[in-house]
View 1: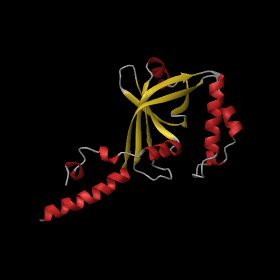
View 2: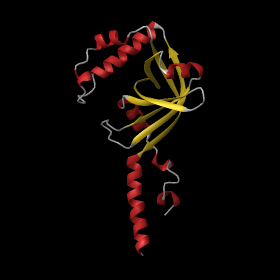
View 3: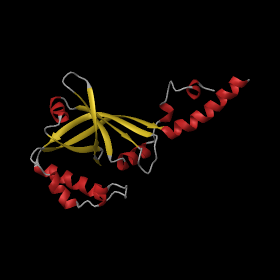
View 4: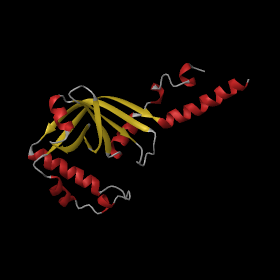
Length: 182
């Protein structure tokens, strides 16, 4: 038995396959967006996003500390999990990248429409807000002078598949248990 199969020191063998990573990106709908404050400490929030052409798009108002931080330094990351998606739990991906702030009306209207349509067409998740969402009205609701759009471009990923790890752990643990009993 290899060292990888007997402990979690190296979990590279549990990478999320690229097609499953894309599925996660399409279905999660929320991510943890992370940036650094002036002192260099990482901070993050959970926020809705829309993936388009390999980028992750989000929105917030200028008053949010993340907007000021990204204006200073665009280095950032996004973390997605499959928890609450049709994929089930246990799959994650962390992206390292850069974020650009957009405040032009064309980009804002384009993104608001994508976000509103995505939220209005989600399967019934028991959320009263999304269940009765009118996309046109929601676009108007979002369109305030202080709102901006964030464009995150991933540069590196750390994909993880907990299902692969669980399967590998079951086999390794059974062998470990057998060896301990001998």
